Every structure is written in C-alpha cells, then in structure tokens.
Amino acid sequence: MKIGIVGLGLMGGSLGLALKKESNKYTLLGYDHNPSHQKDALRLKLVDEIVDDFSTIKACDIIVLTIPVDAIITTIQQLTDVNEKCTIIDFGSSKEKISNAIPSSIRKNFVTAHPMTGTENFGPKAAIEELYTDKTIVICDVDKSGEFQKGVSLNLFKDIQANIVFMNAKEHDRHAAFISHMPHAVSYAIANTVMRQEDPKSIVALAGGGFKSMSRIAKSSPNMWEDIFRQNRENLIESIEAFNQEMIFCKTLIEEEKWDELNQWMTEASGLHNIL
Image (cartoon, rainbow, N blue to C red):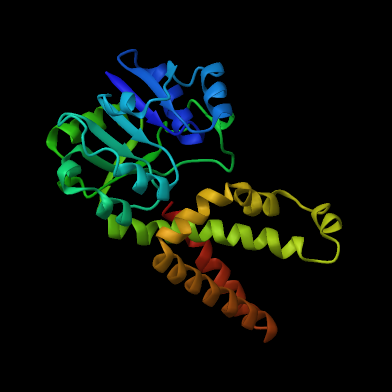
C-alpha cells in the first residue's frame, strides 16, 4: 500500500516513523512545500521518498493530511478526482468545519480523525517514533465514511498502536476546546503575563517545574494554533469564559480572605485526577 503523507512536521513525521517500525506493508511518500522539511524528512528516514507532484499523492492508496487546519480545507478541494477506493485521513485538531467542507463526491473516501497527542515542538526534527503509541485517536462522523475506508483507517491506527474513540464532529470540537485549545490559550497568556513584567528574566530565574509545565506549550507553533483558534472560535470563547469565571472566583476568595472556601475550591479541582 502506498501512503502519501502531506505535511512532514511533528504529526506527519511521527506517523512515518511509527509505520516504518510497526509494518513493512506500506511505502511512504512525503509531500511538503518547505524544502528544508523535505531534506530533513529524507535524512531522518521519516518517509521513503519525497514527491513534488501532488498528482502522485492523489494516486496513493491512503492519503494522510497532517497540515494546519485551514490548509486541510484548501487541500480537500484538490482531491475530488481520487480513486473510489482511496482513503483520505485528516489529522486536524478541529473537526466540524473540516467535515462540512468535504465535497459530497468524495465524502465516503474521508475519515476525519484527531490524534490526541503532540508536543510543543514542530517540524520534521520533532518527529517521535512513539508519539501515537497508546494515545487516543478520535474518529468523527464515521457514519459518513465508506465501510472500506473505515476499515483501512482502523487497520492503520492499529499498526501505530493507537486507541480509537468515535464521536461526532460538533461534540469533538466542544470537548477539544476545554481539554486542548483553551489550555493552549492559557499557556500563551501565562507566558505573556511574565514577559510583560518589568524584569521577566529575574522572574524566570525562579521558575520551577510548575511554571515550566504550564508554560511549555506556549512554544507551540503560533501559525498552527491561530488556525485552530479561528476554526473553533465559538467553542474556544465559551471555554475561555468558563476559565475566566474560575479565575475571578479564586481572586475574590483571596481578596476576601475566605481561606476555607479557597481550600475547598482547590480540593474540588484535585478531583479531576480521579477521572483522568
């Protein structure tokens, strides 16, 4: 089977490494507009071959789109002439707008998925062989995918040892806003809060594990996350408002010196780890 991986950064590169480790039944073709990404992907053996002609990608048995969400929607429109047996999988972090943008003529070819994994790093050099191992991949609106394509995608996800969850796209986007998109916004806010103080270097000199953990994902690609924030705007706003309410409540308890209530608020928060 020929797999065309469009986008050779963290997600696409890690997919290539995982498939090379777990199975020899795939030939991996890579496609990326960035020449340095192309060179790095070959040097790091993330794919077997780099192709410049997108028609070569369209002729693959499986096409995996591991590019920013806005680019996924644009690229979808170029895939209307693929073979009826072709399986197209996107790894976008928001799903509803992508799912709705798929032309009806190739809707059965599509499996819309979101791997719930990643790091703050990006580009081919960030690729990790075990990125998908035992991680959840959410498949959305699976009833709109063809049975053949569903089977192909499930086998591929099995080969990279991922766990599968099914969900509709609207539900996914709301959940992702709270568990992924809003925390990224918070991390950027934490970083900017420190950077805008009079002496950020002195403040950072005191940084321990807690601050580093909470600010780590602020290193993530601004271009990628701008796209995600735009596509999931309404859900993200709702999640930020919910977060702000909790912060205001915390601030009020501190201002009014309601220490017992503050302790109870913290105790309730610690209960999250009982369900993780």
